Length: 236
Image (cartoon, rainbow, N blue to C red):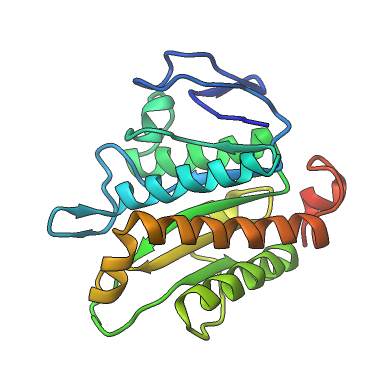
């Protein structure tokens, strides 16, 4: 089943074409089991290294992840399939562009009410030797922690690392989403080896495959009930 989200969310419905520049929805359905949040976009490039922009890597992996999940018949929505800022969808909202962008990402997830949301990002640090994936979940949210553990294990296997997922109360998309949500930092743009891997379409596909496997395992083992169930809404 192929499900895209495109445009503004209003009155509990997905808006039609035209609400986001150049983006046409292939299907608009509230039945998504997974929402893919593609980090940054448009004027917000995310972290950078020279001309390399995080937003482009996030989108490349996000589209590959969507393709894998839809090929395995997992109802999935993605909040952008091209390069634009989600803040453009709701220009009338209060707050600066960055806050409106974050609020729109959360609103998409809350309206669709999936089993969980995956927020794709690329990491950066001043220490160029630090490398590998990192999954972040909301502190004291057990459903998010279980999901983060599955994702971290699969990504560790791919990278050959032994990193533990991290709990946090600092991220807007984690603290304001009513559904379990995790931030998937897919590697460090500041690390030479990670950077080469993140730019490789072949490795991007491996990332998508690993994230998809962990997500499908989570759906089967940790989120077996319907996306709109009380159990999944509480997720604590």
